Image (cartoon, rainbow, N blue to C red; front, side, top):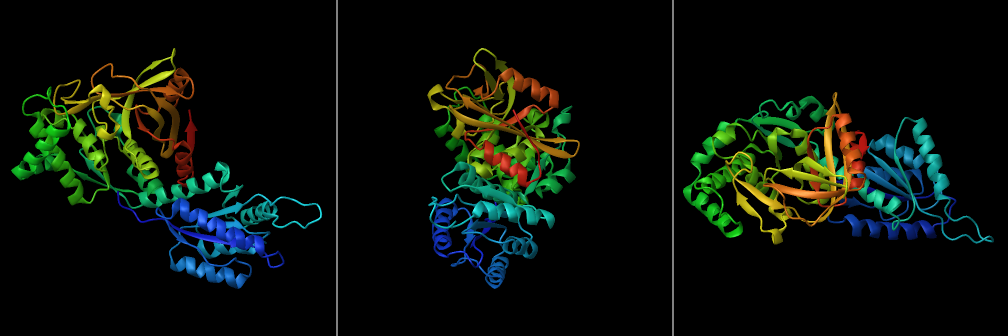
Length: 450
């Protein structure tokens, strides 16, 4: 997925009468820490001196504006009056993270060296009176409530920037009678900055027929080499390769950043039910949500941006109160990176209707974050859950994960039902729970934690 890096401005500040040594030390240490944490992910714009006077601050702001800075992080080297934070908000209008470190060790016979918490409290109040908001953070870089939160916030703003301007490709509309797969295009544009365009499924069919035979043969050979296709029906391999290559080509030609597809009933009658195709596309970094579930596909994109890993769209089909597990299953769309090889994954036909291609495999064990964006009356909300995917073989055809939930599984299911949350959930094998919360926050989306 394309997207420019986030541009981050960084300041260390103090008012003029406070000693210089501690602020200069913090400038050096915090700038080095930020470079270590984010140097490859984001563009960091860091002045080489502590901001003390209005003139120094205005010059730094001019540099930030020239560098198109998206977010400013302001660390209190020592006590700072209201003028610097106010100038950043007034002159730049970008998000501002105010960060007050812990005080140095106290000595009863020595002066107060920083008074950072007091300064931040004062600055936040002043900004609020002016009608500005900010992110106040207290603590040191090695404290997850401080340093960890700074990183999560910056990654949240990076995700927001990356999503803004993305193009969604809609292949077909929605499966028959699937009202939950409808979407609100205006709310998507307003909330995420994404645009949407459509491509008819007949364009995929036409592209399949135009493909060079050597390209199709090469992909068929790849599939034979990498997957067990011993139970794949005659003719399904060629249709799998053709649909895989065709969708990939249309996505590229149309400039879609990600998509959602009406994968039945038309694709079923064409014998190209694309479950395994979607898994292979995701393996190559091309996200296409199944059953035209645009909101689930956006959830996938958020998880990918925050983790760099492959998410899995699934139904929750069962729960077991005795071991507090939920079973997350889908027809066969999991990216191969998620397959558990010791249980012998297979590339077969669709597990319910016997057409197309689908992976039949359990998914690997590990910590998972489970999320779902849900449009409730024009306002998005993000549902979040945590769990641990267990090391278990599949108990039916398709792709599946048995997840021991953080909270009682039955209570979680009943809450989902009470709120009317749609049936697709997006699992990612990573602990990005807090990062998703921060991202929802910067997008103005309330979070429901289950």
